[in-house]
Length: 461
Image (tube, rainbow, N blue to C red; front, top):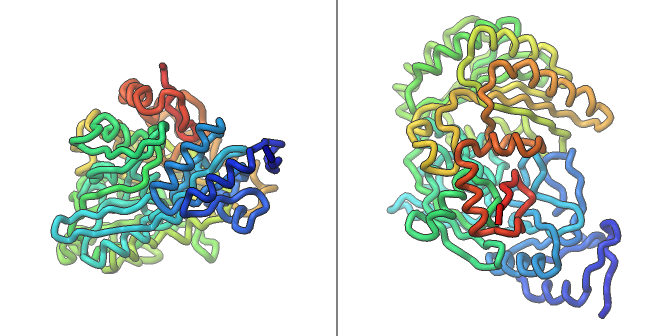
């Protein structure tokens, strides 16, 4: 048979078999050198530069089944791309097959039932534009270019988390192509163990081709930023700690050390109030009147605009390196360390972000879904971002040194969606007390670890 040498380290694929695959799918099958191949393999984090042997740009679930069967029959490593926004870069692999869901954009809102079914290539910006047509939304990412599938499978925090729970808490069902090439539906009444595992277990169990969500009435929100000079950061963080502890569920507030476009280091509080605007003005008055802010950008806005507000801070094509972990409390000692390390930031595009949760997400039992960190209070994200690869050492160094400095205040827990390539011990911390149960789900649906390009749960069969 005719064989073609693919430019990925000499991997040989049977050309006739590739042609059969291409004829079988409705989407595209791309190889190195094909038009569109490099665009398809390029993901959000520019630090990740991998070259698969094949990219299957899927048009529907049937294409996903064909791609899974082809990869299994040809012993190919598989990576799955939804939004391609994950910091670890697991959406692409070297010398394997990349299943690209990004062409799969189908959505159908049922306003009467307040539900929506959306395909696995939809981003949160696209999702929100569709659901907001009907005045509806669910908890989604804080950056609109993030894919719905990856965020939800890892748990899913966002602006509505305190009022309506996590994205995974609002998942009603999912269609999943498992390692045997079968399309299964997972819900509370069908493949319940798989449904439990999907809500926090990441991409370990299959390719999720569509997701059905519960929606909530969400209209105009009160959101934006209140910015202070970093010289006032210690007082701002102390206020933020006390203010968020007493906040109603309708209010989610993040705090971040940032640099303005004109180069001024600031610390900003970023609220989103999703209740009645008159009440929101009252709730946010202490935040807006605290200290001497250099800018108050809080205003009524659409939920879609709220969801895109941070997009410019996280553009595609930049070098990115993160570390993150949950902190149970913002003690005075931890605030001192955070303020000190923020002042030593090495890039104006880097950030140090504190996210406070609680509310509805915290009132779910830790074993009700695979996501285990229900009692965590604050997530501390240390994010370096830069454009010149030759500067990588200094920016990565700042992240690592900052991470070491905050370790005395960490809980040992980590959010899987912000976890980089950090080893098995950290993966176990991401899944926490639910890890062993997740192993059992993995043993059932992926006993050969076919889906290994993720924060991996290793099967034991």
